[in-house]
Length: 345
Image (tube, rainbow, N blue to C red; front, top):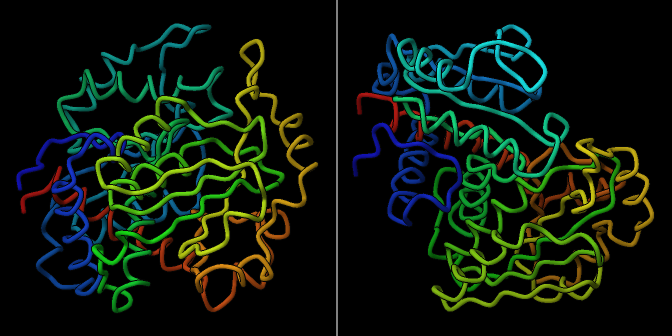
C-alpha cells in the first residue's frame, strides 16, 4: 500500500488497512530491529521535529527512529525561529511550511495544553502546516490527538493478547473490553492520548467503557467518531461516572488524568485550578484491589505516570503492566510511519 507523502494527524484519518500496513511494518522492524535493510530507508534525509512543548519519550524515540533508518532528526523550537504570532512579527506558517518542505523529508509538531489559549488551537496550527507543506506532516502530540501513541497502544495490547513482544494478534482484541478511566493527578493533562486510545480501540472492535467524574467530558466530536466506529464494528460503548463499576470484566485498564472542559478562561490555561480540582477525587486512583475485579486485565498508560495519584506503584510496576512495552513501541511505530511516508521502501 502506497503511503508515501501522507500526513498523520490522527489515526481516524487513515483507513483500517492503512493502519494495519503501518502496524505490520512496525512489527517486522521490532522483531528485526537492527537489520541493515532498514538502515538506508531515510539515508540522507532529515526529519524536522518542531517542539512547542518539551518531551522525554517523543524526542528520544524520534531521534532513535531517524538514526536507525539512516536519516537525521533535527530538533527545533519556536524560540530559535522567528515566527509570526499574535503579538510579534515574523514568518507566517505558510512561508515556514513551504521553506521547510524544500529542506526536509517530513515535519513533526508537538504542541500541548499550556502552549495554546483554547482547546483545539494546537490542532489547528498543525493542520495549517499540513495544508501548506509539500512533505508529510505528523502530530507528535497536540491538544486533540496523539496518533503515534494510539498506534503504540494498540500494538502493545495486541502483543499481550498475542504471542508476546513483536508477535501481536490484532484480531484477538476484537470483543475485548477496554476500561478507559479518568484518574486524579497533579499534571492537568490534555485530552490527546485518551482520545486517540478511544479512537483506535474502537477501530479494532474493542468494547469500551469510558469512566470519569461528572464535569470531565471529552470532545463531543471525537466521542461521536468513537460511537460510530464501535457501531461499525458491532462493539459496545458506554460512559459511566462511577470509579469502580467499569472494572468488572475488563481486559485492558487504561488510566489517565485529563483536564476539564473549563480549563481555559480568557485565553489562559488555568493549570493550578485544574490540579486542585482533580486532587479532590482520590477514589479515582487505580489500585490492585480494583484490578482484581477485572478479567486478568493488563494495565496501560501512555506515560509519564503520576504514581500515587493516577495509579499505585504495585499496579504500574506489576506483572500485568504494559507501560514499558507500549513506550518501546513508540519507537517502532514511528519508524514504520516515517519509512512509509518519507522513505524509499
